[in-house]
Image 1 (tube, protein in one colour):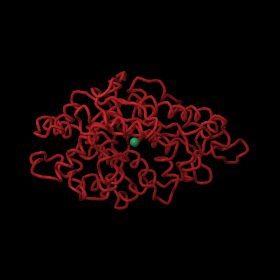
Image 2: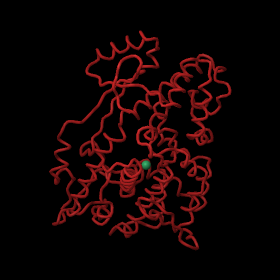
Image 3: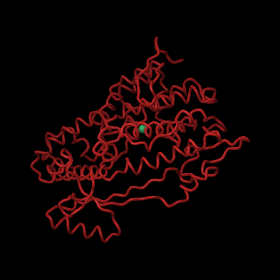
Image 4: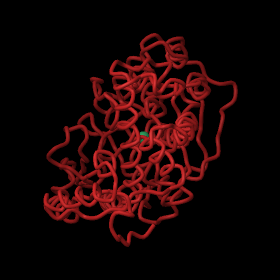
Length: 412
Ligand code: NI
């Protein structure tokens, strides 16, 4: 039995109106320093450079995911009956803590490291941390159960499906939240209706046939959010400069570690060995930005220029890549106007499929329960989803370089 709070706590939230907290271990987890750190990590990384109100944090997203899981556990027919109290608390905590290992500017920061954020989430949950202590004090088996749910290792697939399937609490919260905070309308869909049409059948979460249209709407929301918000070329340009900035710092450090003496927040990430939990948790966006403003005065011209660009939003311009020849030509142009193309020309490809019926594991697919009780995979019964799945994958390959090298008319 888990201890309940003397009085149920509520927190206001623009997406869910209220976040409801009843268990002491959940309240204590929110108060842990590792979870509080998420206040200092933007949910959308550099997207606030494009959508100026996208200032929301991983902290509020994580609370939102928790709230959706709590509602699934308490309101969806069959879920409560299907799970023990231990599993219910573990899956709510998995929702709350699934993004614990995110670093500053999420995606770009991952590119320059040996491990993804999922790895650090596991390390923080299972290693020496305050949050580990809080969870283990409530039940010694809790930290491992939560880490297993997040890492898709838990034997009860229903739990994994709630946190990371293709119709999970994580995606449902971030689409609604990111749409709200960017001020776009693409990400809207009817969460209430989805929750009302969810059921449990064959030990998995399924949507009743009457909920199909709402789920189609959710898939379309995802599609539009990717191309309009997540893959916006200006965000990708910020990431391009950030990646070059880090690459330069790593190269300088490898040639001569002394050249970065005093830049202590960065040094654990420049070495080739594993970053400790303590160093990792200390790295948040304020620490990162402070380090960057120090780098603006660094004697190395490339490092200081890249830091200045990031701080003043003097980002790279971009062009679509038609074929490999365009990259070679651009490389010459970048060199001709005095830049080292190693750091001043980057290439990236954005690719996304809003629903993947074939590549996903069974527990990550979306299942529909027909009126006669049969269960089918979503693209088998939805004409719209089938059309999206059969269409070609949309992909977008761009190169990024200083605008002064060539006339580009990128709107920013
Ligand atoms: Ni998330």
